[in-house]
Image 1 (cartoon, one colour):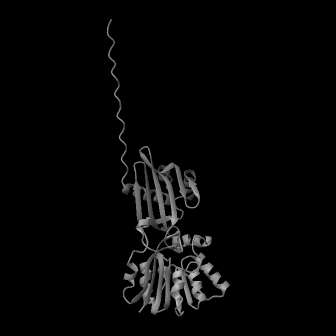
Image 2 (cartoon, helix red, strand yellow):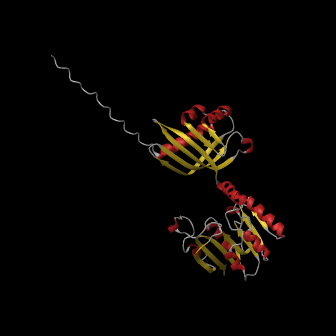
Image 3 (cartoon, helix red, strand yellow):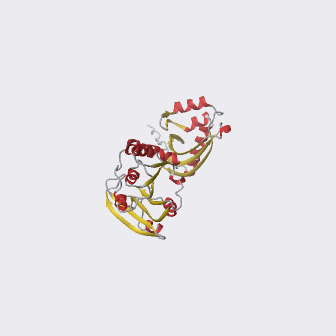
Length: 332
């Protein structure tokens, strides 16, 4: 009997090597390109770029079908973003997903007779691998610049919770024996400190970016029959003046050194600067706050340091307990 032929096993295909992730630069460029395609209502390019599970969110939920339908309805000649200048871009790329976050200054076309619109905002674009392709899974935008700050603080003051409504203890202690004069409350908010000063004989100006906070301070001043000059303005643009104030406060108003440099010449001789804010505390996972010695260095020339301490206490804002910088300086 003849022998059966030997069975030769079929070769086993080697598994395909995983595709390498794209470079961060290519994902950033891909993000720029898809937004330009949306600007120009390039439906074909956008269709290819979007994942089946795509979501666009700017306060309203828009899925892939409705995004493409809106582009078809708009057409390429309708007013749209004509220029976009990027900054502060951050990108994270992994084997199957990537995220790009960046700030963009934008200007519209189609309204040249009136100068067009300008926008400052933060984009978030999330990409996902779809076979050999990369598809846009999520697109988000939120307002940036002073408008974004204003919106955030407006929400806080509209709800009116999460912070101390009583005047700051450091400020109360500091002015207890001071002769009232002209006072400036930087980042006044709802006016808890400005109203306290006004009630104790000070001529008070309060500046804040939040129109909700300004409105609440004005209403409280009217109700209590107190004089208060409430200025609704981005503090970066505010003119602090020269030899104008007997007291300037920065109570939980950040640790903005540029503001302090403007404050120093605005104080009169003998004028007081009062600040309370979070102290830098890396042990608590806190990567912002005032480091030791920063304030004394800023006010080192021409000022007497009245108080410069770090305490563990209950802050007026944000946390149950924290290390706090309390600082008082008097102009010589």
